[in-house]
Length: 371
Image (cartoon, rainbow, N blue to C red; front, side, top):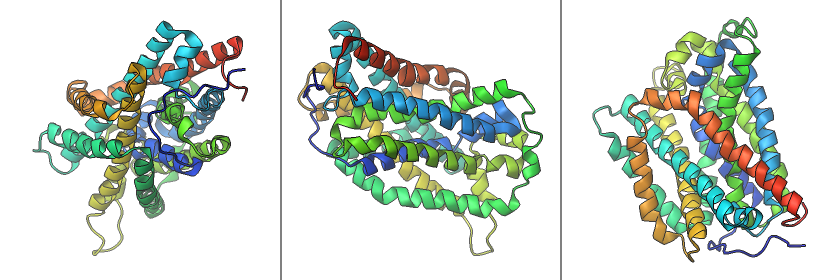
């Protein structure tokens, strides 16, 4: 039986399952706690914390599908084996859909960063400055390769985790847990929809389908991803403490609840301007996320086109990302509307339906190695 094929990996670097787990954690947590609590509070209200548990459960299903698929083709990315499973035409189309999904998410992340900086700190600076600046830095990271991105993340992620824990611990004494009562006030249906909104961001972990061939210890990645998802659940629970601080109605009206949580911290007259410090950490996380999306987009496009190097595609991909960041949304409110109404379906189509379809067809046809 075919063992997955050698394929054209292009990238020669390797990372460990621990480094991948750290990348996946940064990929999701860098944005899910910044503005998602406002979107979820507007849908589920006081029951946003219940939506987190459902989202974690759904994310575990998506992770199982992704690993079951990736392990059948251990030496190929999803762009390569989709053609093997579905044929060159349909498989090529599926691969292109995934590439477009990654670049759309990258453009959205560049826009969110620009909106954070413009709304909170420098409202007179054009968005194009922030979007172009972060894409240029991500360009350099992607040019250096996967190993460099993973090593930089090993330095930055502990700072991000420390910031999350600090914000949660500092805000906890001020939290009014009565703001989370009564339970299921708006019914289970709205809670479930809020969980789908959350899992549409958690589902970005399917980027493992592009990174699996570059793992030095592939058998350990399944368990590593499990711990990542559980850790992300805890991080999201810290994020919804905003509801306990401000109430569900006020949180839903905020642009960036996490930033307001930081500004509510009172640690004495000498501990001021903590929001600047925390945002600096968040920007580092967003940079890693954008660099990783930038990298897999260029890598996937190079494999889709049959090129021997992805670096020649970095410039056009970067221009495309900046253009998307500036043109896809008219305002920050548009980002929230898309996240609440449009993106969940689009994300689940790309991160659950497509991998599940590929897995089913691969098993039916006997393609790839048995997991």
